[in-house]
Image: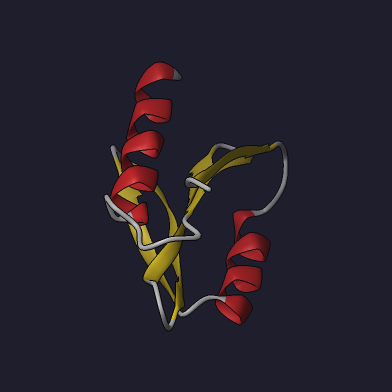
Length: 95
């Protein structure tokens, strides 16, 4: 199987609640800013794969979007590189 990608648009939902959920289940969660939009980046890892999951949540007014990229095999390219680029493209295309 190849990588899994998902996109979610949370309308009127607080990004902080999603971040707290990520903090309970991911190896690391950090702040991120992409093209002037703030949010979080969450990384999940597996002992045999390393960093195999990345989720980027970005605030848009009262909404936020989230890209999730995960691999079931050794990832290439890195999932966070992919998730950040998909987020950048989503921001650019929203204008």
